[in-house]
Length: 179
Image (tube, rainbow, N blue to C red):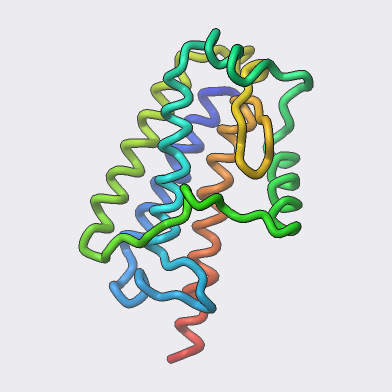
């Protein structure tokens, strides 16, 4: 995917996610099945994961290379990255504590959704300073997947939101069973 294609995908994915979460009733927004994260916690987790990426993308390219190095392999495809992420999750991988959600009250869900969309807009804006080549050469550390190219990091960011959107939907399927 090109930078422009992934940018469009990121915006749509996060828009779909925030629209879904903000449309939920208070009961569904706060519902947790088997101690899984609530819908609000899912959205807070996604927001918390985009903020540090935005900070990293503010670094000058030379500083990124100095701090993190350069890629020594081609970028993985979107699908290959998803496979790798699922493998790591299957081995027990979990979000580090700094990305764990505390919980956002129902009355503050729209503010969180707005903040997530603003952070997504910032991400898209910052991506524009990188060339297609930069996306495949520059790397950033990922807490579960190790060193990722910027292209892979954008793929992860998109899939990560989709992953948590699906978890929210699955969690809420259990509300139908309890009624």
